[in-house]
Image (tube, rainbow, N blue to C red; front, side):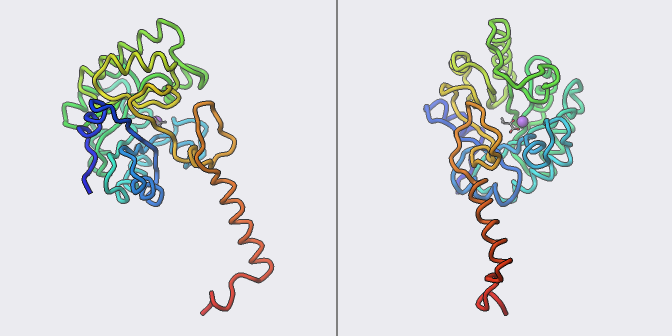
Length: 265
Ligand code: KIV
Ligand code: NA
């Protein structure tokens, strides 16, 4: 199998082929996602919510991110594996940013890192890039800054915030990021950004004009029934399927129909 590289991702934008991306946090799921054929797998710090049950992405540690990334890398044969630098591992200190990125690359075997923010973290991004580590940007709704914003609503609806986002995107391109995630911004702004920079944009809740799309795997699969933002399309109702399967198992145990003699030694 030919591996997807950052160059392949870049060529897809040039060619006009949309880039499909999903998150994964563990070996079993990553194997399924990779075999299905997405180009990019993000070991997102959404693991903090999805895997660990935290309310925000802030508590997850770099060691926990490395554990998830190692599990994903073991399963992936084709996709580009990108790992989120967690909150507190890169902001405000480019030296620390570099050592965090190097730890993730060395200990997990992943192919790139993702950082949230624009101009504020330019030094960190530049330093990581100078070590030869590919960087993906992340603008718009940046969940690590949730306590600054206060809500998870759509970002950059106002002209000033939209103008800053466009500037940040241009900066990310200029310093050498290979791609940028745009989260929960108006479609119009996504179109403008995607047309203004040559590196691919990957949208989530950012409309159809992004060069690629990403969703949290567990959301797409319908595992969390309570989470239903407008941008989410569910491709399965796995929560129901799993609930029923487990219910049937319980019934069979109680009624002594499981295990049968054929299932025994
Ligand atoms: O952590 C995550 O899952 C993400 C994507 C939603 C972009 O950052
Ligand atoms: Na993230």
